[in-house]
Amino acid sequence: MAEHDELEGSVAAWVLGALEAGEIAAVRAHVEGCPICQATALRLGRAVGALPLAVEDATPPAALRDRILTAAATSRELLPMPANLRTPAQGILPAVRSTKVSGQRHGWVPAYAIAASVVVALAVGLVAGDALGRQSPPPAAVVRSTLVGHQGLAGAQANVIDLRSDGVALVDFNGLPQPGSGKVYEVWLITAGGRADPAGVFVPDPDGSKFVLVGRSLAGYAQMAVTVEVAPSGTLAPTQQPQLYGSIA
Amino acid sequence: MLVGPEAPEGLADIELVAQLAAGSQEALAKLYDRYGRLAYSVALRVLGDPGRAEDAVQEAFLKIWNHASTFDVRRGSLRNWLMTSVRNRSIDYLRGRGAHERQEVQLQPALAEASARSDPWREVSLSLERDAVREAMSNLPAEQRQAVELAYFAGYSHREIADMTRVPLSTVKGRMRLALEKLSSYLQGKGLIDG
Image (cartoon, each protein chain N blue to C red):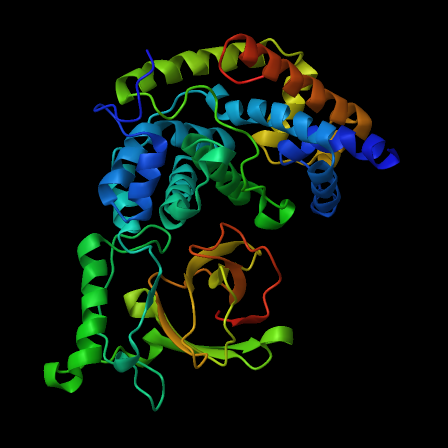
């Protein structure tokens, strides 16, 4: 009861998202086990859910709708690569047509046609290779980095190939255990400020490898990390500390 | 004038989410047409910068687009999910991700606007809801309204608010609690939320 007396007063701040980071776990745990506080959180949470309606009405720019639809066209981020499209020697897919992307805001996603051309170019380059005349991107447009496994994923690693001129990245995972029933691996792109943006989910092949395409630019991100999350689509924010990560800056 | 989930004028949230999860761009366009204006209004309220508000709205819509299959109707409405995401993205832009751990998961069930109404009615319903919520907020004592606004729209923690307003933390907690209780009671009385 002493715990209830102490934490019950923080429920309102919790539903408002106004607790300090170090306070959240205790309040959340208490609410989960306290019927009184659950009822309070539910009741107050309904009020919080109404707060967005209190703002003054504003008209978004007409172009925002198209911008979002365009971005969505390429934001189903991870497209698992069929094993027969991999290049076994390096695990790298070199034949990508260099596609200039213009008119993006803040490094956001390319336009429909450009995005489609990147994906098509990737596929064409992978399948047809030299027969179609490869155009390797200029050296400065390809940046390689490595993700290293720790703790439970100590045997895993990944090679990241950031195809900057195309605004996509390829990641070659190896040594991954299966994530478990009802689980997937989720890739996160993390800014220097610590914000983690989801970049897609995957399940490794039985041999622990997977080649995936991150269909968005890595510009503005400092690290890539992987966590185990709930299948099939992962989560909006990481629920655990990553055990496979590395710098991509 | 409730309209059933098979109303021809508009898809229920759960149907819309199913289409989003299936990768329907048309569903995403419908989602934007339904909530884009409100989403932008929220982002602009938090950020005060149209360009950054656009970024936050885009990011929030893409979150929904990429995670539609995780939507659980029992945890709240699609609108609440989207608005929570818009608010959190906006606060992240404003104050940095490390300022707080965000609560992405919805605690609150939907307002009674309910996902099953048709689009024409939805517009009217939304307008009525907005009027009611604004009235409820305006009726709060200034210090209670301030505590809620600093937390929700500016992303400050209760301790930061206590420091800024130079009142004890327990007072800030009390103001938040009272404000939300009053809002809840008022909106419940208007039939906008469940008791």
